[in-house]
Length: 123
Image (cartoon, rainbow, N blue to C red):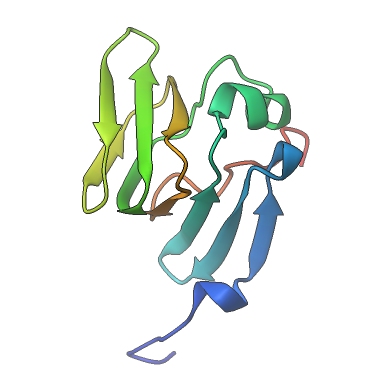
């Protein structure tokens, strides 16, 4: 095993496309777990575009990530909410909905919650 690794998301191990062409997840499988880059297009919302894939009432993934560009609203099941902006570190517990704000794609790196994100429940 090498002591240093350099990889790019443009050559991801797996790409998962979201419903209605509203984005994609590029996933790198590493020795320390999956790392994902998601591109959420304007109009994307978890409850509309991922809920049918996940089969859960809200997103049940925990996320630890970084907003590269765009803006995203995250609302927890209990009503707590944030607007995540470029340059923000985010840590989100399971039990939430999220959607893109504005007309710019929201690009997010996540090194905790994307391993099973947008993966069919029976897969």
